[in-house]
Image (cartoon, rainbow over all chains, first blue to last red; front, side):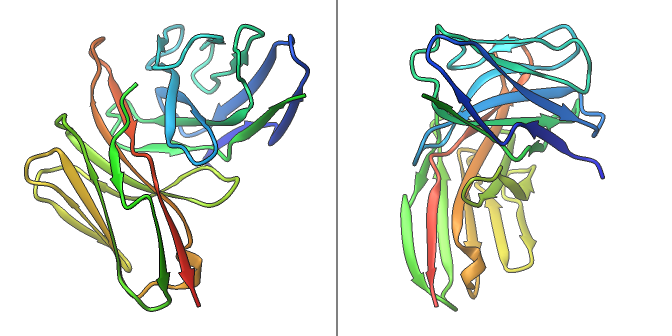
Length: 112
Length: 114
């Protein structure tokens, strides 16, 4: 089945540690996105990538980093510089025409 | 970062009632999308709109792309308990780098009382 897979579903991190969230898609989509969702809030854009080896900062990129070495993969690293990392993280992808974006199931990150 | 204004923020309705929600912006968009999100899950695309004035249906759902391109509306007819969730609108427009970005609404939380 084609789709977007995020892993893990739940992630716990100690303060001061970096952690990487995985996002893989087999939809042959060129564009991929990372969003952050806080309780009762909408989605805020962290980073996005239109093509391999290229990505742009979104509205809340500070404390995060990404890479796009393969078309299928767009991992997000939450660094220790992110002051409030506990949130629900959503990965999405879309075609080169970018008319419709499809989401993964999300990763809930909790800092303990 | 910008978020679209979505209303109402939340609503409780009786099963069988119709539901209306809307999304407004100060900016023009060239695509409007509507998503539904269940608790702890990713948003699922319901309807996509591509032209100003367009009216599109998906089962009991009907959405419209506002004629000014600054708003969109979603209606759910004859609501059922499984309609419960958060509904998000999203607008798509070019970014300053020449690529496209999706801007999301703040969400409408729908609860259906049986």
